[in-house]
Amino acid sequence: MKADKVYLNGKVYTVNGKEEWAQAVAIKGNEIVYVGSDEGAKAFCGDETEINDMNGGMMLPGFIDGHCHPVMAAQYLCGVYLQIEWTVEECLAEIERFVEDNPDEPTYFGIGYAEWIFDEKGPKKELLDAICSDKPVMILGSSAHEAWVNSKALELAGITKDTPDPIPGFHYFHRDEAGEPTGHLLEMATQTMIMDKIDFFRQEKVEEALRDGSDGYAAMGVTSTCDMGAPEFALDTYFEEVPKMIEEGSYKQRFFGCGRMISEKGDVDVIIPRLIEYRKKYDSDKFRIHFLKIINDGTLETRSAALSQPYNEDGSMVYPLFNREEIAQVGLRAAKEGLDINVHGIGDEAISGTLAMAKAVREAGYHDCRIVNSHCDYVKDEELALFGRYDVVANTTCVWHYGNPDMEKVIGDRQNHTFRLKTMIAGGCRMGQGSDFPVDEFGREPLKGIEMGCTRQLFDHPELPVLEPYEEKLAVKDGIESYTINNAYQMHMDHKLGSIEVGKYADLVVLEKNLFDIPLTEIHKVKVRETIMDGKTVYKA
Image (cartoon, rainbow, N blue to C red; front, side):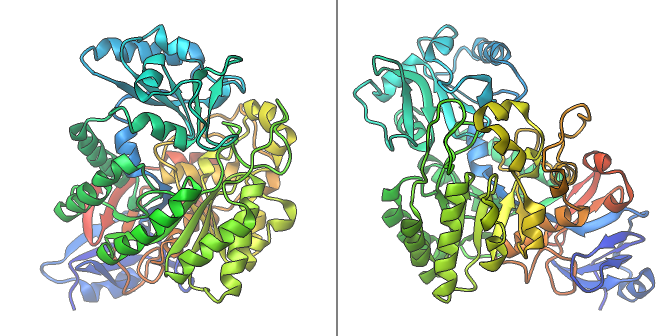
């Protein structure tokens, strides 16, 4: 058999658990047909074979972004984009510039401010009113778990002091002493109440942003995306535009997803039956809907993560959406239907719920159900080992693993006991990794995540603190596995993706340098030379 493509003279890191390194790879159609030495690859070279000399570059399995929101990103990134390091004044200046540059827009939307630049009372509507008072303005924080709106947005959405909070203490409107909404919205149910009444998005811009986002991923070596959910208003894009773009080749990654997330208890009876139908309809290796996504708490930045001890600033407590018994029942229902399960759990109380659910699912005999806890910021000491015991994938975002003094005012010394993934891996846990795009803060490039997992320090900023505990720094091997085979396992695709071996799909990335041979702080600078998805080159430098 002669191959369509042969790659020679490389440092091929296979991640296959058998032969760790190779020199050459041969591809026929969309499959890998040979992995081994340059000499052995000669048998696969024919007159029509495309021969590629990697010149000592590193080949890896194509990166899999195991936690991202490309459909939501296409909606949210069509407006003003604020940088996480900006002050309040810089954010306001950029919003004002955007409004002045786009006078004909009927609405204004944006994302990106750092939640910690405001105190626990959050941003105020008056700041946006001073820029634009006659059109609705809505700006999401960097985590997308809070929003900042002007008075016109509240007015058009019918939000007043008499409007009840969707989930008091979790999804709610900040209010002044008179009970009037201040323009600071906590969590997604409040955002939905605004977005359901006001159209902030133009479909033609959304489609363009979706293509641009996919092109960006290809340039980063990403060959699969695991979409963690989108709002109801974005589902037409999710189920119509993305499959069409994959078919025509303008979406250059495999797409695994869930549709809409469960963010309120009432969603369960709507979303699980819907997912069962989606799974029947969308079940190809390029576009598959296969897991249930549960948002069980918020974020530390917005003081909405569910912690077992109060927040430092005001002594407030936040509780998970589902208690342990409730989430166990939801998990059992999903597992019985053959669905995988992904839970957003940042605070230790929410993560305790994920682990209680996993215990119930495993003890009921559902051992093939892929259970994931997303983010894994703060885990109780006694529960670190339970990830391995109950086969729960710990999916995290290592670009968040850096010392951030601003967070100490929110959670105090607990900041220095976050993201203890090395201990979890030692206990038998699989660590996955994702960017959480578009709330990726410092970029969605996998190489940044691999580096920062190893350094626990913001890339290109040696003057900034390293995140304690220092002994939780990961190895390069851990980072690579988190973006390849472990994410493939999470998606129930480890038999077809995530490693370089004969019979698997030819989803590959070629880098200019071997990540094991350079200083850790140089990893994010390594260039992607080529990205191959399903045997076809989708990016070449």
